[in-house]
Length: 303
Image (cartoon, rainbow, N blue to C red):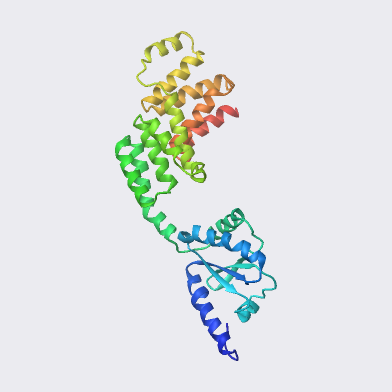
């Protein structure tokens, strides 16, 4: 903003705007709330936008409130014609008009969309970068069968980032692999509602469901004998898959379930397919093994 010909008060307002809005917006998203003391809707909006700004602070969001009666020049530069007016500023430029938002959910939706598109430097973003290698390590260790060590790694991550769904989901799956599904369920029950629906937590739920349906320590010889006598004994195949899952033989479990699906995909309301999908979710939907098994499933379903 040019200051040539401005009054001293306007020059001070411009300097304050540069200090409070333009400079921080080089790395953060600054919400500028234009308001006035006499504005009833402004007073209704104030606690909502202040709460949202505090909630998003670690994601690089700042709130600056500008009284239009005290900063007429600044308001005129933004062509503010009614209040409340709220702009999102990044690198000195308005990137979104949030004036139509009135509820917390509307602000969250709009901010999530904006933040996903901008290179905002934030505490949360830096933390995510710091813990990404640890999450990968925990997943590798868990996939390698050392659930005790994996649990320790995931616990360390949650000490750094208590609300990280990936680390909490890892804890749930590690506890389940250690034969402690009750503790895993208690951990899920302790989570706030919004975190409890995260895909990483749903993956943990699938692991618990799979573990509870698996049958550890089963002598598979009688099951194999039943199948030798009757290859279409789907119940024996399903029990065999559960026993194989219990000992970590996911290839054998998938083979048994795919055999059922190939012969009778509607057996017991798709029970085999549902079990296979749970196994996919637990292993990880982007895992190469899962992708290969999905291709096998698709070949059966669309043959």
